[in-house]
Image (cartoon, rainbow, N blue to C red; front, side):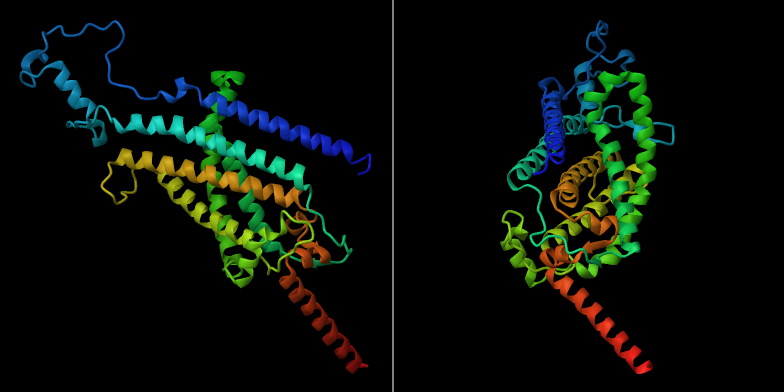
Length: 368
């Protein structure tokens, strides 16, 4: 390794360690038992006077019902009648909200943080043990077109919108633990409100990108026999010199494709339901507020899973593999890279170029 490259490697190690430390602090912060104890109950305000009527409802409006019986019914979600259009207001207490809040602030936030920390640690270990995956035969200097402009546009539209959605979404779940103490309530409130609007509008760009790559790449992402060999050899990721055959997309990329498509569909459907609350009546017998809580939970779970997967994808597509970024950076990749990582596709492309040259050469000879 040259002296010029050593500082870059040390900086990469330092950045990775800082990210790990940040993630570990996040896990420890949200794992605070005080945060997990989200279960609450209906209680009168501190210092309030209770039982002033001897246990009966004032005025005998509801009959001779004790305070405890009345509040027990309220706690179980009893509904009354209201004159305003929003009939949901007839329910004073929605107890399922406690369970939803406990899940959101407890296991969901904790497991999500552990997942984010875990993928960072695994990628750091992989980099330290395996290093950057090089092109074994070196760069040839000759390139082949891997992705057309429309394909790259669809990819970057999806990628950039997803990153914006991920950052603004993570702020909803974890921002209160780190940003709020640093920038204060007023600034955090403004940031969170702006992030909410940005999240809502960028979501439509994400959906457009999702449809674009689905239409362009679906025919290339169905499984074939070569995928089994690729998976058996883990794509050569852990062994130098091992390059299982693959078409335009290998088995790992196909798994990523379908995770993004189905996960993106789940995010889109739950996201639309949350952007337009109580406008869609979903089957299942749940109350409208329960439906929104269900959508919020699934939206967060799918998002966290996709963020973890995409972090690994970004690593492989940038610092993890030599020449990989060129595929989406310029649309062209080195021929040796193509032959090592997508040999079947490379042979088809190179063979097609040879045929075109041969036909053009014969046409030119005939013209002479």
